[in-house]
Length: 362
Ligand SMILES: Nc1ncnc2c1ncn2[C@@H]1O[C@H](COP(=O)(O)OP(=O)(O)OP(=O)(O)O)[C@@H](O)[C@H]1O
Image 1 (spheres, helix red, strand yellow):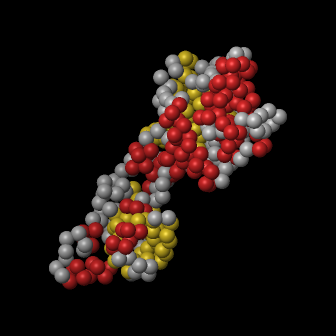
Image 2 (cartoon, protein in one colour):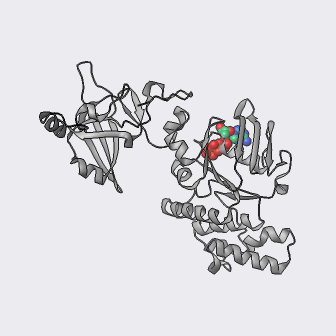
Image 3 (spheres, helix red, strand yellow):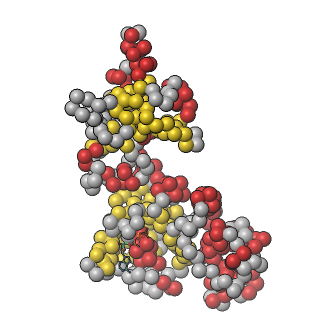
C-alpha cells in the first residue's frame, strides 16, 4: 500500500516550506525526493518520520493514518547523513540496539544481527568499535541498524552526502542491490540528480515546496513536465531560440556539407538533412572547446556572428561519444554546422524560468 500523503502544508512563520503536497509513494519501491537546497525535501521526510507535524494534511502508511502518531510508534527505520552511532558499543551491539530495547530474545537477536551484518557486508567487523570503520562502512552499519526492526518504511536523508565521490558511487550501487533483495518501502532525500537517476525506481522532484513531477527516472529525464524539471535534471544548452540537451545537438563538419552539396547534396548530410526546427534551426560556428570526459566528448561551438550581432552570447554545448566524434571526423577548431536532433525535446529559451509545461515538438 505504501505511503499516501494528502494535502500537506507546513509553514515556518510566514514562510511556506510545503504547499499542498499530495503524493503516493509506492509500496516496496525506492523513491527519491529530489530537489534543490531549501526546496522542502527534508521537511517532507521529517513529517513522514514523525519528527515534524504538518499544519494541515494527512499521512498514511500501509493504510494506517499516522499523521499524529509519535515517531517511535511508526515502525520506521532512519539513516541520516551523519549517523550518530553509539561510540562505546561494538558494531554488532549498535545493530542489535533496536531489538534489545524491544526485548527480543537474545538468541534471536544474535541470529538477526549476524544476518544483517552479512547483508551489509560487515560480518568481519561486528566486534569493532564504530570509530574503527571507514565512512562507507559506518553508513552500511547505520543501514543494518535501521533494518534490524523490520521497518515498514525506511527513510534516508542524504545518506551518502558526507562521503567522497568514489565511495558514494559504490554505496549507491550497493543500496540499489540491497533494495532489490530487501524490498522495504524506502524514501531517500538527495539533491544529486545523478544519484536519483541511478538508484531510484521513482523520483519525486520537489521545488519551492511543491511537487513538480513524479515519475520513473526515464520519464523525468526524457519527458520533463516543466521547464524547472528540464533544467534541473540533466544538462541543457541553448541553440538559437531553443533549449535542449547537449546530446540532442547534431553536429556535422562544414567541409563534409560542402563536399556533399558539391556532389549534388547527398540526403541527410546537407543543412536541410540536419533536421532543424522552427526554434533551433541550423547554425554555423566553430568548435572552440574540446573536452574528453570518460568515453564522451564535450564540445563548445561558438556560433558565427551575423550582421545583427552575435547569434547568442554563450557557446552551444554538444555531447557525443568518442566513436561518434571519430565517425564524423571531427577535430578541435573545425568549422561545423549544428542543429537539433529531429527527436529532440525543445523548449523556448526565453521561457526557461516559467513553471508551466511548454513542450514544443521538433
Ligand atoms: N525549523 C525551521 N524553522 C524555520 N525554517 C525552516 C525550518 N526547517 C526548515 N525551514 C525552512 O524550510 C525550507 C525547506 O527546508 P528543508 O530542510 O526541507 O529543505 P531541503 O530541500 O531539505 O534543503 P537541503 O537540501 O538544503 O537540506 C528552507 O527554506 C528552510 O530554511
